Length: 75
Image 1 (cartoon, rainbow, N blue to C red):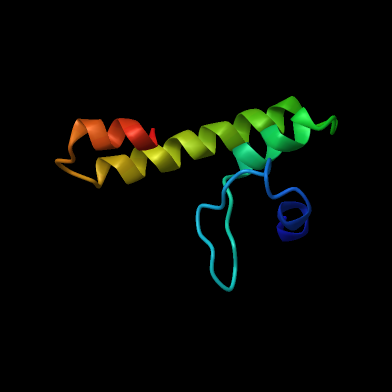
Image 2 (tube, rainbow, N blue to C red; image 1 turned 180 degrees about the vertical axis):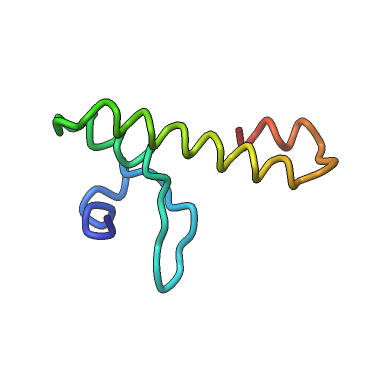
């Protein structure tokens, strides 16, 4: 992933975490790859999207009382 990101920095999805190891949402990377003509299994894309939705739902539920305007900026 890092090699793809370095070669296509302007269009590659942003990392969720960057440090000694970088982490991306798989659904975003698969969408990017599909947009570049890679033939991907639709079920894999669907599962990755479902996992991302679950993770984002869990993360936002932990936020508690956050200004809705701020939340709208990241969702």
